[in-house]
Length: 240
Image 1 (cartoon, helix red, strand yellow):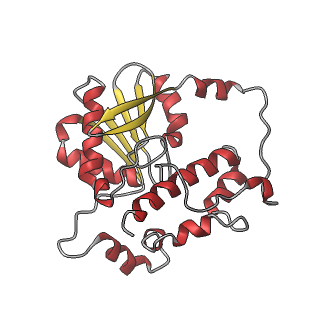
Image 2 (cartoon, helix red, strand yellow):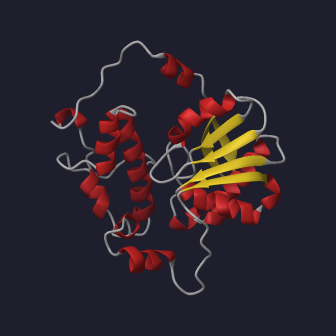
């Protein structure tokens, strides 16, 4: 099974009465700006990362959360590049167009931080500003601890620093506080949530929300969702 293949049918939005696909029209000024973002593949730390970037000047490294991609930072990329910064937003390993290593052990914070250390080196700079959100914030905290010399300043959103518990596993701690229904806990059940996502009649709630806000089209939301499912499925299938 390839890194972006699915072991179950994907939902078809065309057969779902809740949604309609936007027809493509003449690109707006904002959409033309988006097209100016440069995309490239960078080999780092034994994997290939997809990186979106724009601008010249001091580097701002933008780290997305779960289940997201570089696309979460599209507006910030344009804004920062217009203010004299080089905005760099990778798809972290296992997300989007970046490589999806097959083993669970390949996704430790040491691996993900190692990717970023190598990415910074490939940019030809000594220090970067770092902005993290959600899971990306957790990665950013650990980048600061492991290689503080690479970080000029840090901005983190939604996730505060939490030290590793000396005896309790992170999932057990989450379960104790938030219960069995927390999404991280539910993802521990092999293919359970993934099979729910594949049901046409019950699309994920965040797909509904994003579509109602008309932030971007259903096609793009589903693409983000499906790539995240691909990561979880491919990693967990290795454990069977």
